[in-house]
Length: 93
Image 1 (cartoon, one colour):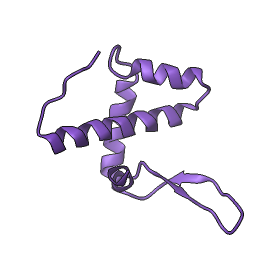
Image 2 (cartoon, helix red, strand yellow):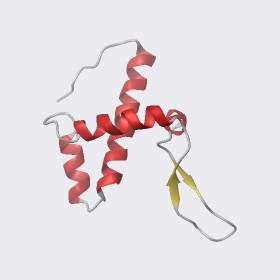
Image 3 (cartoon, rainbow, N blue to C red):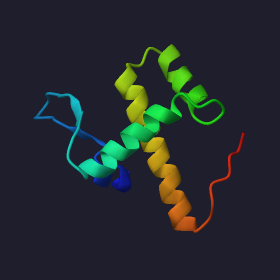
Image 4 (cartoon, one colour):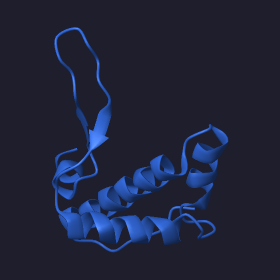
């Protein structure tokens, strides 16, 4: 979650007292966010990689940008795990 906030892909609450505001994604490193957004656009069209996840979210009625940001966060989590574990990417499907 912290890495998503650093990249500007984590939603922040805009609450006050008993009022519950909207959740906005802002801040973070713009270059990282832009690169992940473009990578997520490409990944959403790639068979076997992330397309099935994107299609499930679309069928659930999620807006286009919500789907793309979710894929960007997924890509960020995978990249973080690869760096953390000092390993290479292996597709599980």
